Length: 91
Image: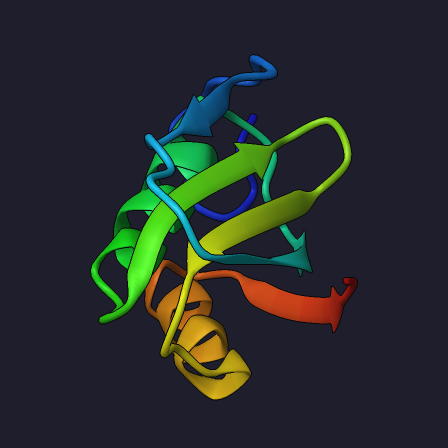
């Protein structure tokens, strides 16, 4: 069962939005356990100005964000609005 949203699902779903261009940043997100979690995180990050694409990988707990002009703080806030925690950054 999904511990964050209690939706009762547990599938390993990946959500991907189309990437046009720009830089990529990889973030670790804790607390995601199902497809609903993936959808929630992807939707909130996708609302951030400058984000061109979002790729959420449930199995690794990572989110790759493409685009330009957004900050780590904006991504962190979006993840928190979705109900999860940014637990680190990558490249």
